[in-house]
Amino acid sequence: MRTLLLAALMTACVPVYSLRPPLEPADIWAPMPYQYVEVDGVRLAYVDTGGEKPVLLLVHGLSSYLSFWEAQVDALSEDYRVIAVDLPGYGASDRPDAPYTPPWFAEVLVGFLDALGVERVHFAGHSMGGQVGLFLALDHPEHLRSLVLVAPAGFERFRSGHARWMKDYWHEKRTLDAREEQVRANFTVLVFNRRSESVERWIEERVRMTHTDPFRGTSLAVSRSIAGMVDHPTVDRLEEVEVPVLIVFGSDDHMIPNPIFTGGRTRSVAKYGAERLPNATLVLIPGAGHGVQHDAPEAFNEAVRSFLAAR
Image 1 (cartoon, rainbow, N blue to C red):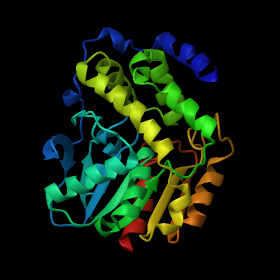
Image 2 (cartoon, helix red, strand yellow):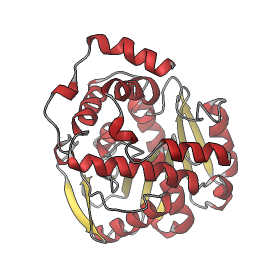
Image 3 (cartoon, rainbow, N blue to C red):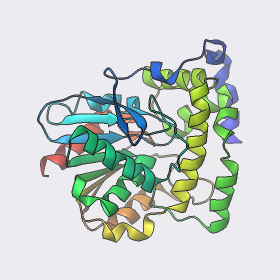
Image 4 (cartoon, rainbow, N blue to C red):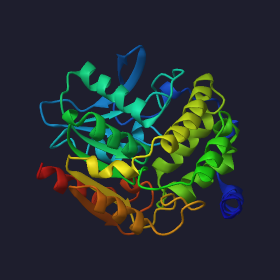
């Protein structure tokens, strides 16, 4: 109710992007020209700063894509070959009929690295991407130098009834059915704590993609991704992760912990995960939200640089 009320108040003097022409996912903005590679018949879009430096792989979260790392791609390329990829189902990548579970995404990324001829990476994953990274660390640690978990999913426990409700609610058309004001509220109330031109662009892109054929595939991917995160928890396997881990949360994250089913404070969830990972460093950035890499890019990038410099 609070979110819908705020959405109504915010839409009085904002652009109505639903009246603008549809935007194909392949035409969304990216910090560098897209490159493409095929993995098991699925074409993946990515950007790559190139060079012979250690590789830093950036993986986005649910309902987002590689440009959500725009404040990191160039900034971190001085010391690293930065590669940001659109997961299948999202951004400019293909939308196959696939499971879209974290273990499946992890296997796709193994194939992606093999296709690029990259053996080991520093991995940074945001939200759902963090849970995918945990499965890489658990099932394919040979590919990781280190793991950066950015406001990661995977640290919370959900009762069976809550898990079932989430899977039923996020049916295959739920994302398609979202109205423009709901999209704006999600971005400006739940995900990001700082307004910017980038946030406004992401809202516009999301709204204008809604009525394209590829976005139907994204709606399916979102539904299955949420079910996959619920069905493949990592919270009871954190002690098995052997690679060094940096955990970065914003202190004012409005999505973790889950405000409906879990409650509590972000700090508590972050500390719970850090205490169970054998080799973890925790950084809480004051005032930042779930999109911490956008809300506080300088503090975030410095935390990543400091952590990776010792690896």
